[in-house]
Image 1: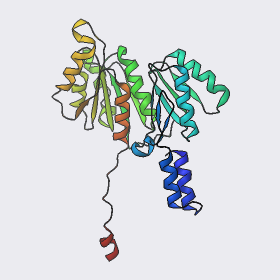
Image 2: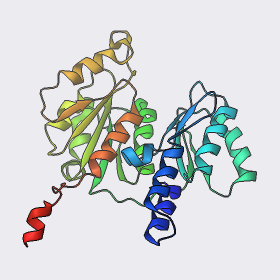
Image 3: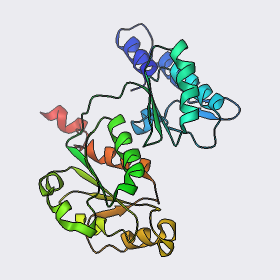
Image 4: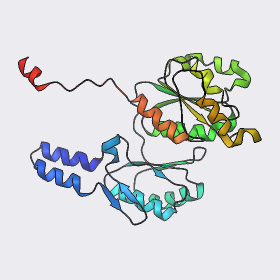
Length: 268
């Protein structure tokens, strides 16, 4: 939960602030307009995960401005996706002298993490499997995203259908997973194979890896969408972030009990 929001709630609990005063503070800044970006400070409350910064197309100065706004609003852990080494270096140099929070760059994933990732508290493990080594950049984007959102991740790389024995040697990890992310280019068959082995949700990620008729991931996308394995869902081409985020949501779900009926509770 956002630190500033928590402080407001604790103040109400201690009697230092009325509920009306707290409501006014919560309404005051649902987002902050920086001119080039409108930073959503309430996303963590609505969705459980604060805003993630998409780094591609943004200048280092714009990213720093967004990060500063989030930090000043109490956010102490922020993901920046699709960020180049050059931009990450500029951010690291800036925050290395101004803020004590760590700044980590994951080169393969093209992700930067501002702050410390939470302790893994999901209901199980997320398995990230790739068809080949060439799929690893997308896989790392998914894996680092999931880890940064508080999940334990198991990586199974280069276990594609060209050598099924490689995948089958990891049956225990596959069959005990809470969620599996299956990442593959070419014909994208890995998702169907894993879907036929696992009893958990499988998130398929087509990649743009492949020769001409792979059409930069379109063939894998269509193959995964037409999977005959039940329980397979598909995200966009090369969308490791989307897969990691969705896997985290699934891995943090618990059975929701209906709120108790006030009349029923009164009779007890």
